[in-house]
Amino acid sequence: MDQDNYSFEMTIAGAAVSTDRDLDVRNPATGEVFAQVPDAGQAELDAAVDAATGAFVDWKARPIDERRQCLVAAAEAIEANAAELASLFTREQGRPLPGAQAEIHGAAYWLRSTTKLDLPVDVTEDSDTRRIEVHHVPLGVVCAIVPWNFPVLLASWKIAPALLAGNTMVLKPSPFTPLCTLRIGELLRDVFPPGVLNIISGGDALGPMMTAHPGFAKISFTGSTATGRKVMENAARDLKRITLELGGNDAAIVLPDIDVDVVAEQLFEGAFSNTAQICVATKRLFIHEDIYDRLRDKLHALAQEAVVGDGSQQGSRFGPIQNEPQYRRVMAMLDQAKENGLTLLQGRDVPEKGYFVPLTLVDNPPDDDPVVTQEAFGPILPLLKFNDIDDVVARANDTEYGLAGAVWSNDVEQATAIAHRLDTGTVWINQNLQSTPFTPLAGAKQSGFGQENGQGGLLEFTTPKAIYIPKAPAA
Ligand code: NAD
Image (cartoon, rainbow, N blue to C red; front, side, top):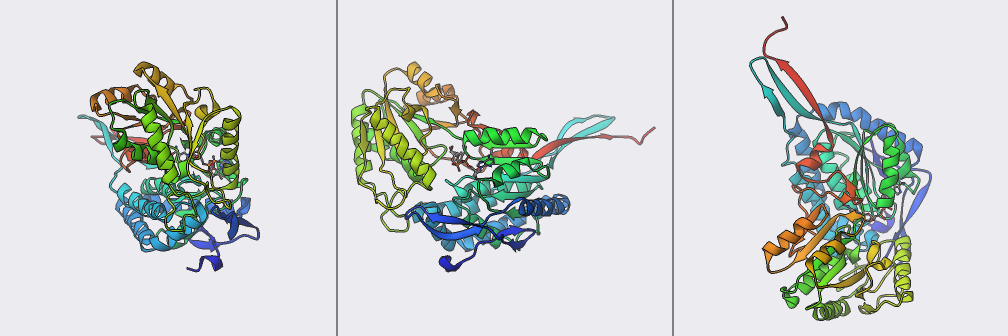
């Protein structure tokens, strides 16, 4: 595919759809516009919802195995085009190629793996007189809204369970990263029956327009906590079901028995992978005072070694911040940290052009500084000293967020005991950034509402339906 001359179109009712208006898409490594996408308005949204509503009747009636086959075929189509998609991904998202490839293959893996899940029929009574069966039936048309940090993987987390359960969908990528998603929509036009999976792109007005649309039965949203609140307000109008995967300010707690040389690289990756634009990245690193200086210096050395640069160039380990508004937010946080007199330990210089930010460690700032209390969603990592377990657990939990956390220790029993005390939906011990199609990702507190992945994530795209079946004909 010649990406410079490629026109990106939406997919509605299995057909290509464009608009009179276009949106520019920029390469964050250069800041330059390199593609245009349709800017859908109410008319295109209505058409997509109508197509999905029409397709729902047939799709939900199909045996689940037929829906499974379509999802497996979707995974195959993505894998067959993985090289093209990965290079496009790097240009629009900024992440270096190996990470881009991992995301494309990860999405295919999720589509395929989710088909191993099943919709159970629960029998709550089977007596002489009757049998009560609880089926899990699809909801209707799902509104799926995705952010820019993992645009393809997070779309697959919604497409796979929603469609497997028998729903149809209208999916909107972020205006900052629409290209791979639109291209995947095109690749899947012949894989799903027309109208089952509709993909539309648009600007800031489109998200609220979608969540207000009465044709949707469910909203599956991933993005910031601030936007999640707005989604919930709109959903309340007609009681749409919602799943919200929102922001986090994850703590990792490092105990003194750990081998600093062994874990430093993993801790570094857990904080800075994808240039720290990961909802479940380590965003507050609590280090026991006995190993604080050694681990801080080791992390600083790693930051000075790591090349931050254009993801399409070999040797770049970390890419730019994905978009200009986010870049400005992260730079403002850095400026504020300097103004507040915090000690910043930075990595090597970054390119001047594009949205690049140097990897930055903040040396033991106060707990109430914005660099600690706010989700940076960029490469600024506060290192925080502790010497008491009860105290560090309280500090880790002192946040409105509750997405994930990690504990690092050679004493796995003690680490597990601490894990139980963290108020988050996920805790990793001596690892981080892990998720599987069979394990719920659920934000506690203001990190979310409901869950994605696993059996529970599948059931969020259904509603229970109890059928009372008598054992004898009506008297
Ligand atoms: P965002 O909330 O600005 O945007 C997310 C999506 O919502 C985009 O597609 C955007 O166009 C759309 N949108 C914006 N305003 C809307 C509105 N009023 N109504 C409906 N849709 C609207 O988030 P972002 O900046 O794209 O992503 C970063 C945030 O996402 C971070 O806070 C991060 O932690 C979070 N995130 C969470 C998870 C998770 O699984 N919990 C995963 C990835 C990212």
